[in-house]
Image 1 (cartoon, rainbow, N blue to C red):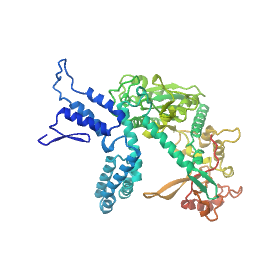
Image 2 (cartoon, rainbow, N blue to C red):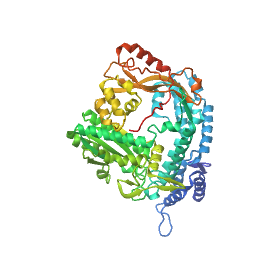
Image 3 (tube, rainbow, N blue to C red):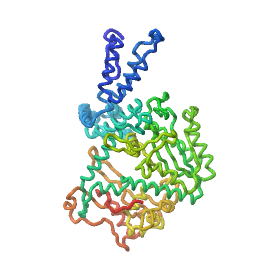
Image 4 (cartoon, rainbow, N blue to C red):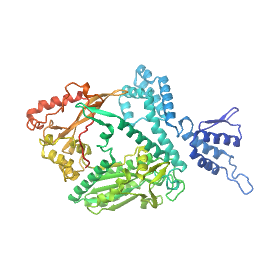
Amino acid sequence: MGLGGVDTFGSVIIPWRWSDSARRRVLRAAVAEQLPKDWQLNIIARARASRAPRDAAGRKIGGAAEGAAECAEYAHWLAEYGGARGADLSEDEIRGRAGAVAAMARASAFEAFLNRAETVCEQWRVWLRLSAFIERQGGRIPAQRKRAAMGKWAEGVARLARRVVCPKWWRAQLRRWVAQQYERGAIEVGKVGAGAGSWYCSDQAVRRRIQQVRASEAMMKEAVIESATGQRASLWSVSQKSTSNKTIRRGELMTRIRGCEEWADAENMAGLFTTNTCPSRFHAHRKGGGVNPKHRGESPADAQAWLSKQWARLRAKWNRDGVAVVGFRVAEPHHDGCPHWHMLLWCRPGDVAYVKATMRKYWLQDDGAEAGADRYRVNIKSMIPGQAAGYVAKYIAKNIDDHQITTHTDDTAPGLEVGPDLLGDMEVKPSQRVEAWAATWRIRQFQAIGQPPVTVWRELRRVTEQAAAGGSHALVSAWIAAHRKGERQADWHRYMRAQGGAGLPRSGYRLCVHAVERERAGRYEVARERWACGVVDKARDALAVTPTRRVEWGGEGFASRRVAAPWTRFNNCTVTGRHNRRDIAPTLRAVAESRLALNLGPDLSERDPP
């Protein structure tokens, strides 16, 4: 550096001629101003520990520049989490920053430049500028939107250009960014984990999630919607009849697990219960306490991506070799927030050894020689027939509502337990911490493997008995399986049988959801979406669509704004309403075409939990 040169430490610029002590003072002041207060003592302790070592006489060893490592430590934290892009923004600050970023985007005139672009190269330059601007300001472009933009340059870039000038879009982007930035820093600084007394995620993440849930509940309880027939209900009452209700969600999952197990046992399949973990570098802290020296800043989202990648490679291998595997996967966090998977898998008895060997092979491909990898990376147990639901019940409850569970334990860290704790005047259950963890990192907690689609099951619950009676044997059997009546429970096993089994491609199942495309005017564009409005019975001809009960809803006063609103759009006559008859094919075709113009709302029909 020459005369007048400067050093840049994160967002702080310091003349190179300043002494090390002056630099440290400025950087420490910037840390105190720009980073969360509860991190600062840890950061300062780390910075002091990185100073150049000295001998017994106080002389520097190895000629290291005094304070250089300490300044670098401060610079790291300021660059990652400090300044206007800090990780501790309040809601008011988020709103203010969203408005400022949207104004910057308007000044950049991305859409105007796109309109003047005449060649693909010019459109490409606008796309690069736009995507760089979004990522620089803390936004994120979903992968599917990237693909759409690359497939149709002008259309895709224009959609994104309309979003970046909207403060509301930036609020959502910044809320997600702030939550993950704070959490990344909290994990790195040691505020998450058994040693910190904050399992799975930081206390701030839990508070943020609880406040978000309470605000949503209050809004839904205040919002009233009205049907075309004058029926009124609150949005809250609607949500409590769906899988948004934790009791219904847990009940449906257990119904599906029990049914899948019954199907597998009937097919004489062998059951395996696996626990799959990540390489140690994804753990920020050791289970016994202390920083993991192999950790290089990987987040729980990075760990989930690693698990998903290995699983995708493993499934592709099984598919190439003709090995069918069905079951369920549950993702849950270790004490330090790093995810791991529990899986219930069923396969043919002759494939058990192959399934075990290939799973171990793929999970040990990455850093498989490290200490403990062979023992902890993959743990596979054979299940006793009829007991799968018992194996996984506690994991379902731990991730939803702590039903009949008082404390959580980490299977890989015996002796560590977490129970309800207090945040101020709020009692927080362990499942609320899991929910906050999953919401912060956008981690899907439950997933079925190789089974018929649950969307058809849920759509069948909207089909009337009268409409289902005219279908094929598969449709009638699946409809009975999806409904509870009296002492008869919903039966996922019977549904799987009606669909033709498991392990089939989506096109191989006997029933599928009938969806039509319709246009929906949004804030930024007119989008075409697929809207489910019935069940297709493949045993009949292509027009054998059994419609579902749908009622049109709107805001208060909606009924009075409609003229001669019908009770239903479908013919429920027991004779002419048999939708699989060829003599009414023209009518069915006309109904299908007319649905394109419909703007239908949620179904408020009574639905019992499974």
